[in-house]
Length: 245
Image 1 (cartoon, one colour):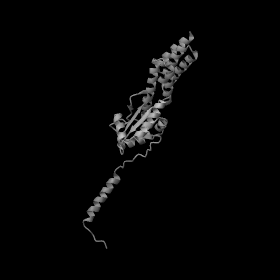
Image 2 (image 1 turned 180 degrees about the vertical axis):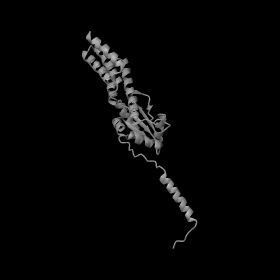
Image 3 (image 1 turned 45 degrees about the vertical axis):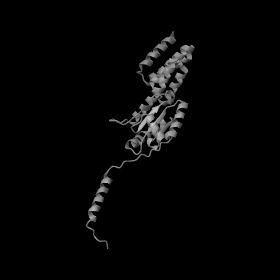
Image 4 (image 1 turned 90 degrees about the horizontal axis):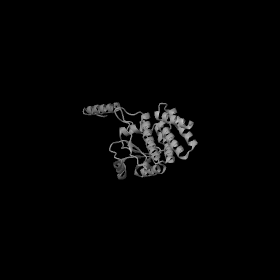
């Protein structure tokens, strides 16, 4: 028969209290996002970088340290959602944990990452400045706002590159980059306006009425997306007046 131990009861009572506290406390749910389609680490970065450079595509870099509530939130509330996962599907991307090794740590230093998680986008072949998209603040971004910000950054780089080409009178390259821009945001009125400008210049250079028609269609498409787009309205009116002469 077990003997009663007067010192055992307070010990058991304390243990039961600790158990109840732990059971009542909200446990942190760890993320199970597996980064499907992502490269990993320093070696994966090199692979993703080459793919981005060869295709003149964006490059996504995601720096994180595990375990972290913020990383888990980033994974579960943004990256794993259907809309964002689908948008990222054809974009070269890599996830990097600076604690995995010296090469990974060096990449964090190279991109000036000192807060985690860090979601960075750039177009390496344009030598564009890497842009960080941080969804957490006093008012966290919705997944729609995060996705729109990502699109905005990518589209800006392609449209800016197209503008540089127009200044060099390289209208064919300008149109190529504007088409690539539309791959990431097919409902961007400014991109269609810029296409109209490029076609307009190209038509004048080649004296080609078919190109003028494409310019007209581009301006109309811009106004279909955004009826208040003043630049497209003005450009379309000027074009149509010229075509009637």
